[in-house]
Length: 590
Image 1 (cartoon, rainbow, N blue to C red):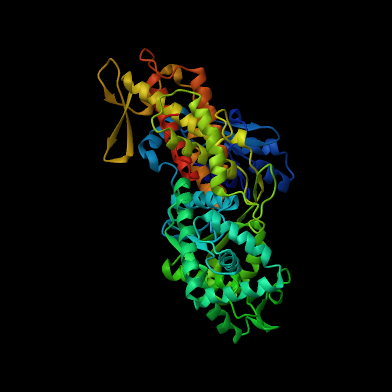
Image 2: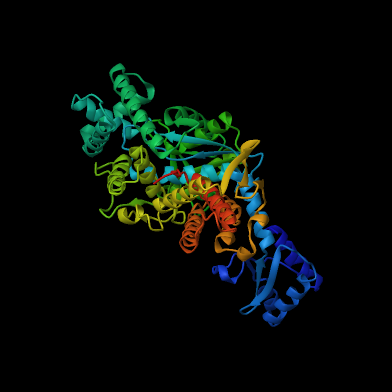
């Protein structure tokens, strides 16, 4: 009895009463005591028919009751006319069996099966700092990549970087002026900040603009040497941060490559009337196609392609390399208006690519100290934030002697979890004020809390194995999990229904959460909203920790202990799978 079958049952029952059924909702009630599913169909139909919704709900329930399902325990009318469904212990036994058997594939679906998806995110620019905004993009992009992949799509990750442009020329100008060699990414960030300030001076501006052109056409050997070395230093630095964050990109795209092709496209479509000449530049008058849009420059007065032209080139270059059905581009919301113009131009030039492109934007990640700017040099770098969190996590771990061997690895895992959870728990587009203390809490509403809950479950499973209560065996592959139960009596493979003793016939709250996982994953992927998954995993972990606090799970003398151990293993599977979809590692011990 999954959601689809239940929806069909409701629809057919209403139709058998001669009712014309349109859209209605079927959701999990906020209060778990109100049932496993609830529908508002009677409220919607009663309003249209001018009937009493409660009376109509009772008629629909009576009709549904004619179809007997052993996976439904009862159906009740509640409130003004809601219909609540309570699933049976048989359903939960079958659900638990399926979960244990699926293992690390549990939660995956086929909604995007056969599709190719390319997700572009992070996009730091060489010669500039990797700041906390890039952490925001990376965290969201990595999770969305994993959710799309879990939906069956062949998924590739891409990073698009501005390796040419005024920001590079400003940094190179400062390095030349101060006769400095590039020694670190921080060194480059300082040079960029200095060049940005100098660009306000007319004489320096002329010099920087000249360097910019030389970088594009690679006409100066000294500038090429500084540029090539600086780019290498930047990319190596970014790679170190990606490793900490758990991101591996399949493709790296650069503006030096997309700019040439983008310029060709603009010039080609200038003759076709898409673009126009204006004061020495080439523009796209987007408001002619949509009054809500505005004009943007695609080739500037110096004949150089702007970001907009480069993006046109990028869309086609991406497709040539990986013929995508879905291209997801993740950026900060400060470029929302720009991206709308770009998509309109793309629609006129490459309509199929425009149709396949989905732009997702996010808000700003802020610290209590306030705003930041790479132009002025007041930048909070990504690595400095991770290190600040790591210092606090390290102190917390060292204060408790738990016999952890590789503490530094655990520190990084927990610090990254604290950061990612704080970012992903918000709905898309909202700004985030990062709270250090809350982010590293082991007591709830944090990444470390989820990790700690997983480590607790693993500890219980190890104890169960030591007491010969439950052992994990593999059949065929690591993804096919079977629960083998041992006791003083002859050992044998048993199903969940055999594990549940008469004393535990009542379904636990934990079981009522576990089966929902695939639905949450599917919704998070369809809406590109990892915060649904965050909320679910937090509620699930609270339920498990309450279960742990209220009952003795490992007890060789208790006939219900195998069932409790099975639930613990199911919880560990779901939580680990969920954390993986968020890009968070699940430590075995904390």
